[in-house]
Structure formats: structure tokens, C-alpha cells
Image 1 (cartoon, rainbow, N blue to C red):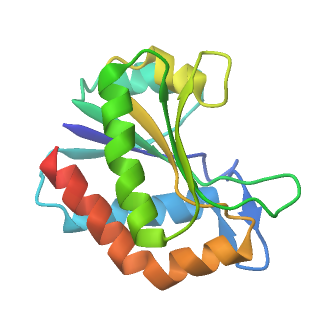
Image 2: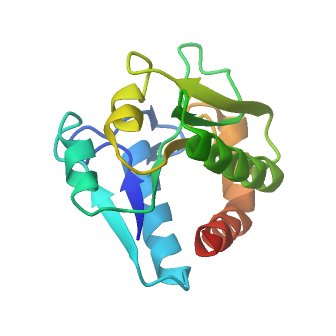
Length: 171
């Protein structure tokens, strides 16, 4: 089973781009639901967060093979750009998974490659990455507060979601 985690919640939607009419929760929810619809895998579970602290326990109860959490980046100055994938420091399988997804994201969106980044418990995303049992990664495909990045996503949306679906199907 593959767990696709929708970053943030309806009440706490994460980063927002008012100009583009986007927020992380809405965008991530749309992406994971399209992936589930397109996928040949029948064992995809979409996970919604009740509380961040309890999210790993909720996921672990499902005993997934892999966990992919969908997010978008944002910066204080609204001018950062690029794609990155986070994994837990020391997780060899997490690092391998992060690398596969990073390649697909960079190749489809064409944004700067910010690389794969290891995280510890005390880093952004560290709680989820550390306390889940299966290899877990956090996708940060673009900066939602940068219109150039949003434009790249919108231009390449179909290919981006299609290639992510193919990769998930291959796991």
C-alpha cells in the first residue's frame, strides 16, 4: 500500500498565493486525488491530517510500503524558486525514493533543482519523517508564492501529475 499524504488541512491550508488563488491544501488534495484516479495501483490510500503530532501514528496503522507527503514551498521574500524533496537523515530507502521523485519533478517542471535534503527530528517535516515506519518523503515541487513557479506548474501540470503517477505505479 502507498500512502499519499495531503499536506496541511482545510482549516490550516499552509502557504497561500492569493494572486494565483492557490493554497497548499487545495492544490495537494487535487493532485493526490488525480493520482489515485489515474493510477493502476488499487492500494493507494489518501491520508488527511487530523493533527500533525498524531499523523505518523495514523499512517503507521495502515502499514504502507511507502509514504509520500505532498506540499509546496514558500519563502519570506516570495522570490525563491525550485524543487526539492525531503527525507529522514539516515534512511537509505527514503533517500533513494527522494532521488527518484526529485528527478521526475525537476524533469517535468523545469525549475531549479534544489536537490534532495536530509532532515532530522528538529527540522521542518522531521516529525513525520522520523516517526513513520515506512520510507517517507516530503515533496516540495515548487514555491507556491512565486508566480514563475506557479506558471511552470500550471503549464506542465498534466505531465507532472502523469509522471508522478507512473513513478508511484512502479513502486
